[in-house]
Image 1: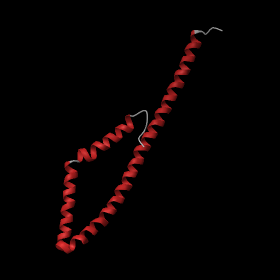
Image 2: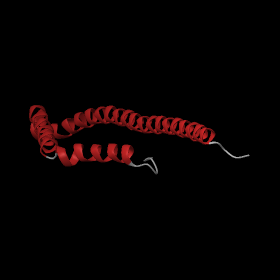
Image 3: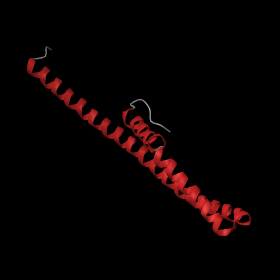
Image 4: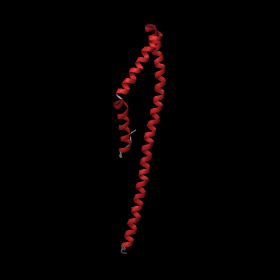
Length: 119
């Protein structure tokens, strides 16, 4: 039972279509996995950020009441405001190292790493 050139070409074409279809499905699954990892980490970050802001507010008021006997209520609020301005300045100065580089590293690791996804 010898294969004719037309039959061989048809089989090759069918196998190529199946291979391309499987590659497209694999790309869809990989993209879905990577998008879900990025969205999951984003949601986790937002939840942690909201909880940290709440904790920061309570700790700020505790620090104000702790400093009140030493410098008065106005002085303690002023000191705390200055501390927050200093923290904002530090974040702005080091934004590349503190914010942009870790985000870029995480997204590139998720999108470009074909073997495994970060946990």
